[in-house]
Length: 116
Length: 112
Image (cartoon, rainbow over all chains, first blue to last red; front, side, top):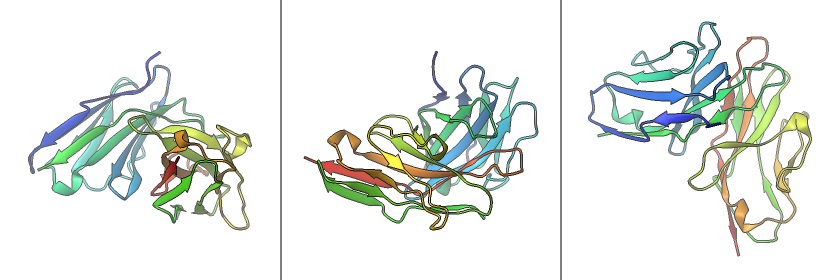
């Protein structure tokens, strides 16, 4: 079947506006992750959803960032009052949710966010 | 704190030359380590994981707990190996959650 999909592929917004980024995980995957890929910074973990458990939000950089996952499937990452430093590629990944051994994460193509 | 260090931003070699991409980690628990690769205009994907002890596309990586390293090696580089390589550590330990801590990546450029 299809892999992880993300929309939009590109988003240009003005500073101070809110944006929503969407992720459709692979069907049957209970775990979903959001990462941020900034130039020269590698990949930074943002948030992790596992089934019906409370999400691990430890990587969210500020309270302007939030994410939800509805029905255990689609997830939306929302950035409020965007700042220029939010410009990055936002990657979503999903996996079966195994803990030990850690299972393979399958990544989406990413959303490139540019804040002017 | 968990940390993954990839000291080289760019590694440039000629086709047929040996390649070693360095990765060092810091983790107090029992580590699970991975190499992910991103080819041009493609998605980030898993290359190999240390528990599998397998060779993928000619690449191998051995976990050295004494040196806290997980270097990626290939004896003879090919042009199609040119890509961005990320070393990652699974920081799942006893939390019940799992997340990957990534290094900053090394761009491998293999020239003809």
